[in-house]
Image (tube, rainbow, N blue to C red):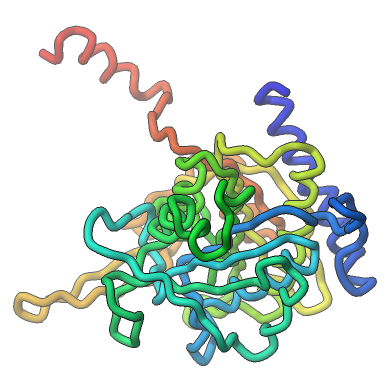
Amino acid sequence: MNRRRTLTALAATGTVLLACTQARAAHGGPGPGPGPEGDRRPLAGLRVLLSNDDSMQMARPNASDGKGLYEVRRALCAAGADVVVMAPWANQSGAGTSATSAGSLTVQRRDTLPAGYAGDCSGAPGGGAVYGVCKGAAPCGPSTPSATPADTVRLATHGGLAAKAGWKDGPDLVVTGSNYGPNVASVVNESGTVGAALAAIDEGVPAVALNSSYDPAATDSLEVADHTYRDTAEFGAGFIAGLRQRDLLTAEYVVNVNYPHHAPGQRPRGTVWTSVGTRKLVELRYTAHGDTFTIGGRLCAPDSPDCRPESKRRPDFALLQRGYVTVTPVGPDRTHTGRETRPLERFVRGGGR
């Protein structure tokens, strides 16, 4: 299948799977699908490494530190996947693709899971084991520095899963998220959720990043609703099943999925194929206190002189704001090939003088 046909099929998969996911939700869960040894669940036999950048703690009052991960774990296991979680010990939002290059990492199993999620993967071969990864050689504790999202994927695929889960030849798929908030436009560059998925395809493993959105009308209190986390996870499990059926799981690029906020009982307007937008979404502020600077920020106003405007016709952020599920291929090749680079190219080819 050539690239254009692959991308067209991937876009169509999203639209079909949104309808299928809604139908399953109305009838109480994942429907039948192909699987080994008589298990007809759509993800039966698929080994999934699940990570994120929010951590596996789920200890904050608003559950912004991992609720999305546990919802995805629940949905994937219900669809038949064998899921192992290796996620950052503590919140690593904004870590991008950063990785630890020396020292030690500790993988610590979580025995007591958050209320309501303990039995979600009890029937899976690995039991849905959850591990947190921290830096150093000592047991992970409240003040232990956390591994980065990319660390967790690299460790898992280079011996971590073999040692802890017995997966000698690695996972079939890496899923990251569901993230606390969307990863679109400029935020994609710093996203640890996308960064972990990029680390996966760098290791030759297909990867899907899932993200749950805030209410676009809110500007001060950015919270992801519980039903949005669950709907994102249900959609994600169905979407991944569609990719698997159509042989579209690939390590050529990350499939970055952003699920919109909507009122309880409502559904997205559809699924759209998009590109990463150019708009700058977050405006950072650094306030000096002597030699110390306090970091703060706010969402960019559309007319802010410090925020880059959008330059694309159908960017991910704009369509997500309008209530669509956005699906975007994110690749590791950062070479810019636009027309505006031609003067620089001529200069360099001329000797750089």
